[in-house]
Length: 178
Image (cartoon, rainbow, N blue to C red; front, side, top):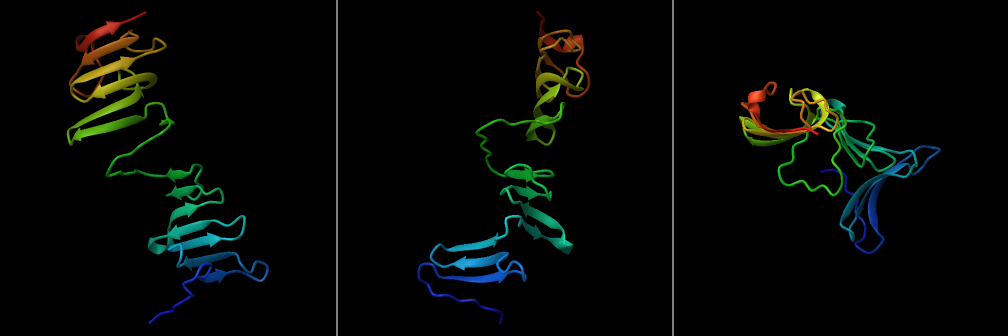
């Protein structure tokens, strides 16, 4: 049972459903091209956008007029804009910059459930700052300070500490200024 739209299997022949109105007779369509093996969902209107909805009609994905794809947002401002936590279960290749938009944000690398390693813009007290901090949880850290606001007073420090909280003088293995 169901509705079937069949077309010839020759070049240029497609099966399609066209949506429109009295003033825009071809506003959007769903089309199957046998030769290209391509199902396309498209708008023909210059201001048309596409939304995919999930449970209870909640919008899950939006493709705007610029071709930007948003997940969890109705106004994606980049080619792929994800609003919410993202999990990648393989490799991620970046051929460009990774921008953390808020001072103090982390890039975290998980070793196991009790040890995370991070790169952040935090000072030696763990507060958001314009320092660059590389931290191996429960072991070594490297802190680079370009403007003298590091609580240890150093421009470059390497230390070892037990994990959380502020770094004390006894934690420092190397402390350079000037």
